Image (cartoon, rainbow, N blue to C red; front, side):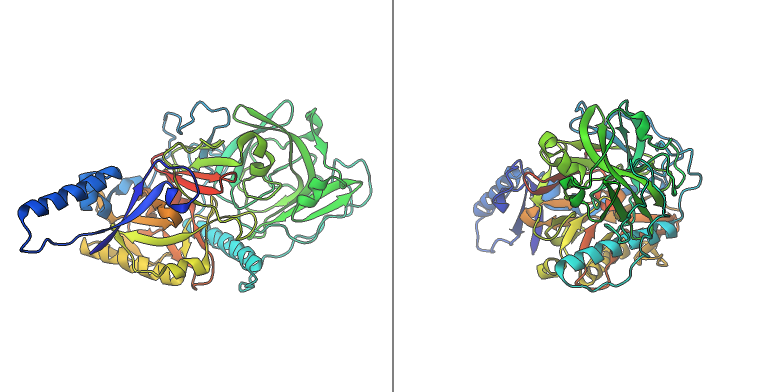
Length: 523
């Protein structure tokens, strides 16, 4: 029987593909002919062991036992209300650009005492679906498919009054068209803005380019946030971007008033932000980025929680990734904690994910903003799921920090779900009703520990994301724990690797080397 084994290596050169950090080898296990001598059989076993050892596989992994099942404490699916005291994470814990990541609704969040009850699961999954549809609309438009038509209401211009920091009192010409449309993510970091710097908690998002915060005097509308609004008048380094500045044309949607550049971004759930495009000093951990361009929002509404705004980490010109390219080489990595009560990190620079990252090419010709990769297969319980590679190449795949549940082409999801259900059935686990977009669910009532079939995503060059056990399932309750993957409903819409499956991995994005990487056990 053929068995796909993904083997980490130490190569970090992204070209050619076989130099990537993981190598997939198909090992043919063949019984020795009856006539073969025991010596010859022994030598064959020795040779096979030597090959496996050369690739760093232990005997247990070669035998397949550690590939098949992942032990899970059922209690770990329901994190406690306290933020544990833990050591700082990451391979570059002393680096000047490393920041702590927390779930915005978890006990470690700076916003924890302000938001009250966390969103219900149906709200989380509905918002996630909004984001996915937004991403797929954008990808379809880029690819010329034009398939999805569901859209949020457009942003309307503000009232005819000066929105704030303009030297002119003329009527603002706010853009009526929407910018990049997404629903915002659920992990946050704290940054400094202005001189002297004030701290703000923002969502970080690889699916967005423009960073923005709410600003005083907010003459149109601002949602409630925990921290005070950013006040440009208190920063000695703040300045509006001129309409004639080439940076103004880098925006997806822009306007002009009194010679000052305006920006607008609308998200898939109808949330939006509109205001002045400005520049100031951004502080990330101990690093200062002078002249950083961002949105100073004065008309903001929507489901942003109590955050101050958003940090855009996409591939566009207005993103932090591109603006700080000279400083960090276009590279950053983050690690999302196993539970919402834990902490992870966001770090910048080529070594931010450590040297054990399994690399795959970043497919930059697929479209703007997003981080596209080539998925080639899925393993369940250590066995390759029978899915034609063309299923993944037709749809395409991207990695996203803000999508919660990984989406797959219908054909791929059906095969994954069937393989997972077969493994769960073999262990005698009781099934449970579907919930929202999740249709492969189980009842763990009365169980303290379970063993799940392992799930691995395989990418071009052999890079494997062996999903941490915390990312295999999504728990609604102990009586309803579901496989944390969902179908796109067709084989044409882009697949999205969501943040649930990224947990505990250092996920590396390197624009300079055009690679995306997955470093296991990073937080």
